[in-house]
Each structure stands twice: as structure tokens, then as C-alpha cells.
Length: 515
Ligand code: NG6
Ligand code: CA
Image 1: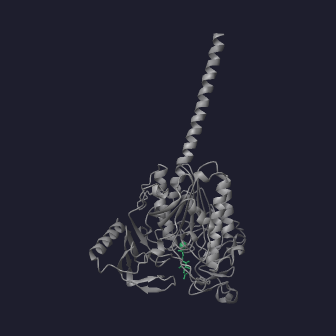
Image 2: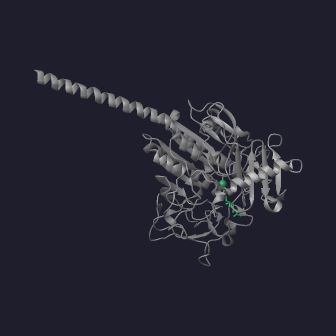
Image 3: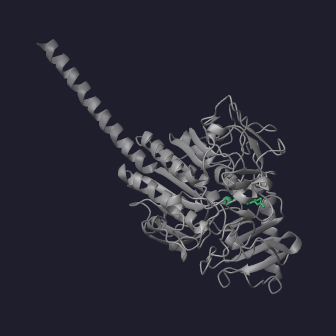
């Protein structure tokens, strides 16, 4: 019997140990879920501070974005780092100010990948921490090898998959540029090899469909650009031929991306996931699905806000449906401030009414006034992020270092990104950043620097573009000082009254830029 008892005891011990291990594993798993929440980052395109109703927008109701704010923390000093798309996106992923890397201004159709393969990014640190990662939507950071650009009919690399994303479904640049095709992982989706896709900047033939030979079919007239290729009623920047089976309709972008996002989330609901949902709303050409057409008083620009809001609602509801609401951090922000008719005349000036796209601020897209970079910024994770309004300064560039800190990953290369995770999570008394450099597009010599309540704006040539949202140059001082506390609208230049402060801030900005 002794042998049998010994054997039984051995088996009992093993069973107890296994049970313990399982319990421990389950406990660890649940702790991990709390310390590594899912992250859904929703980046709007060209959405201004005052464009959504929870930030005071009047011409359009945004119940879903408002719901994020009502269930989370709404920042009143939330920024993107630049007032155009490519540099903000570059900084968001790399944690480095875009002005440090030449050539990171608005990317053209055949732009090679701007972020070299293997560069540590917001996505790669999440991947390293065990997250499933995807970017779905607008890319606008270039694709393909240096000096070459995307190989449209072959393997398109490097791209998002070489900098930390497991999956992508992309609009390669922006929809006013060619081509109108999706890039899924390394290839153009649905491409028929017998009808190759060609993209270039020279008109390929005399009978190429352009704005000039389709004037009567245009949905929007353009003011000076967007005349190269005519497709789906719209003139676009750049030329393309072929790839017909791969081409999409502008009307379907939001539906397609929401659908793809839900599928991807569903496939990865059992592990921590990071979804970068990069909407094309509300960038020109402003064409929504027909169900949003005419739903606001603002014309196509407002309809696009409604479509954006719908997308947000779909993602939030889906996460809820999966029972993941309390383990999922939503971050909602924008890539740059507002613009009205962005070269296409689409009624956004005429139908503006009393809607203020830039809220109480001055300027918008393309300039360094607050309207250019102070944008909606909301975080939401019920049970973790408190409900409220937060006035700490946070910026899209900070997501990289903040996530790295949260996940115990190295953020060494994120040199301009600050760990403001506690502020993003709305922790009481948590501080945001003290100072921020704001940039217009690459290489225009237009920068601003905010430190606390003070801001200097440096405008090379003494002109600011789009300072009144009408795409004109307005005369401004080359170097101005504003007190954002007293004068959020930046109307009163104090540099003459406070030359020493102006000089100190200017030197400080210069020091950061030369770092
Ligand atoms: C400008 C385009 C504008 C828009 C912008 C990029 C003209 C005249 N203007 O050059 O329409 O596409 O580039 O916007 O072509 S962004 O949000 O992607 O940076
Ligand atoms: Ca943009």
C-alpha cells in the first residue's frame, strides 16, 4: 500500500501545483489586461477645435464624439504637433518633431516611406509589448524604398508593417491625390495583374481624363490645383492609369474602414490590441456616403463631420458589444486644425453660418496660430479615466513616450515625446507638458513655441497663410508674443512690451530645434 499511497500523494501534489499555476496564470493575465489595455486611437483629418458639439460646434451635432467626452476626459489644451497632416503623423508615430527630418512635409503620391524600416515607433513598442497592432485608414507617410517609392504592382514595402504594425488597410496618401486604391498589408487590394496600376506626375497621354476635359462633370471646382486626374467626379493631384478593379469610390471609405476595423478587433479581442483608426474625414474632397449628405447645415464639410461621428460611434459600440469597454482606452484627436474650401469649392465658406471651426482661436490648417494645432483631444476608459475636463497640455507627439512608459518599453528614441500618461488618464494633479514647439508645414520657416501661458509665433516673411480660414496670406509680425491666458485669440502682440521674455522664448525654441 505504501507505494500506492506515495503515488497518490505525488499525483495530488502535482494536481495542487497545476491548479495553483493555472490560478496564478489567470491572475497574471487579468493584471496584464488592466496594465495593458486595448488602445483605439482615432485620428480625424483637418478637424478643428470648434468642429464638434462638445467643444462648442454649432453647425453640426456629434453625439458619438460627445459621448466619448461625457464618459471620459476632454482636454482643452490638446494639440497635434503640426498644422498639416504628414508632419503630425510622422511625429505621432516616431515621437520626434518632424522638422528634424527634412522632407517630412505634405507627401506626394509616389512618396517613398518617410519612416525607415526598423525605426522604433508607437506601434512597434506596442507590438513588442505583445499587442496585436493595425492601422486602418489614411496613411500619408510614404510607402516603398528610398528613391523609388511604392511598387504599385508588386510588394509595397517598406511601409507600416516594417515599423510595428501587423496589419494595414490604407488609403496611401490622401484622397485628393492619386491613386484611389487600398493598400492591404504589402499589396494593392484587388489588383488585376492584366490591368497594371501606373502612378506618376506627368500626363501619360493626350486623352488622359483630366479636369480640363471633364469640366461639365465636376462635383467641385478647384481654385488652383487638383486638376491632373479626373476620377469619380473629382480632380486629383497626380496621374494614374490602370488598376480599375482595385479602385474605390470616395463614398465608401468610412464604411469600408469601420467594417475592416470591426473584423480586425473581433479577430484580436482575446489579446491586447492597438488599432490606429486614421479617418479621412473631414479632408477634401468632401464626399460622404449618401446617407450623410445634407444632414447638417454646413454642406459637405458638415456632412463629413457627421460621417466621422458615425464612425466613432460604430467603434465605441462594437467594443462595448464585445464586453471590452473597461479594458479599452479610446483616444480621439485630429492631425491638424480646420480649413474651409481646401482648394475645392465645396460650399464650406458659403454655408458656414455661425459655426466656428477653430473655436475661440485664430487660424487653422497650414499656420502656427492656435487654430492650426489646438484640436479636439479626448481620452475615455470607463473605470480608469475620470469624467471631466482637463486643462493640462498634451500633444499627439506624446502618445509614443506615454505608451512606452505604461508598457515598460524603452522610449529612448522618442526624443520629443513626453510621458504624460497620467494626465492622459486624467489622474488628479497629473501634469501635462510644460512647453511645445508647433510647426506649420515642413520648411516654411513658420514655428511657434508655447510655454505655460506664453506663446511666440515666428512667421518667416511676415505672412501667415490661412489665418482667417480663407487660404490667403495675411500680414503678421515676423516674431510675435501672445498671452494665451488673456488673449487666446492671439490678437495682441506683446513682443514690443516684453522684449526680454520674447527673446528668452525665442532662444529656448531655437535651442530645442537645434537639439
Ligand atoms: C495642399 C492641397 C490641399 C491639401 C493639402 C494636404 C492644393 C492647392 N492644396 O497642397 O488641398 O491636400 O495639401 O492636406 O493642392 S493634409 O491634411 O493632408 O496635410
Ligand atoms: Ca490633415
